[in-house]
Length: 378
Picture (cartoon, rainbow, N blue to C red):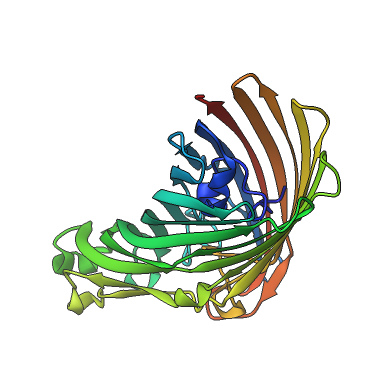
């Protein structure tokens, strides 16, 4: 349904989309699955040269468990999922993008317990907290031609975590319409990092103590808060239309400052700065579900995602642009099991920039496919 789900929120993934929706679930449920993400990018230089990113597949998983513990108004849930996904791009180490980026990847994972309470038949509230763990990998080549040496490789790897909270409200003023507001706070993820430099030019090796150098470092990544407003309309018992609007405060991610523990001042090696200058962005979603019968439901959706990356920081490490996603899926219920599946094609608008990173045109496409299985314990 293009993830237009905040005002529907009728399966255990409501832990993430809108925890207030858990009051619609009865008994104990386990909901698990994963998504395969296939990204592809192309860079075209102002002179017409081009390069394509290498083939990669990213598999963000999810696991949700909910239970009402035989109560009428309460429900508790636990979610383990990837709130901002896992993804990145890898480029040829000998290609035209190599001095800017040869690899970039960010992975996010969250553990999120929540509780929901039905105040009356048409108002439910939900809230919880989460711990978010994130990994970061970045690589690029370093031009050493002036030192009469081949390219060196600069690598960064980091991992760490931070805390946040989420909450939601679900309103059912009547059978036809439901309204939702959900909130997910930002989180500052502090990372322990390793910075390494390989194939150092012979003339610089006395300063680094050899052809390779490695040092500890630290940084912090400010992930954004997200506010969602949703509405669902049910003209019949079989048909549901849903609409969501997400506002993400990406302006919190201004830059990632890498504080290097062991600097090599003589060679100009010190703290690193990865600029983002991100801007707040909207995501608009529309979805539909048609219940063919008590077992089979057919679904479709559209999502428009506004880019948070300004022209000045677009590059091969983050060649983002506005996106148009179209999705199809279905759900099939058999006894205590429900099987869900979807496929989403994400079309990025071509983007041409002139900046100090790497001017040119960037083209992207992404295909996502996933499945989930729900098991109702009782």
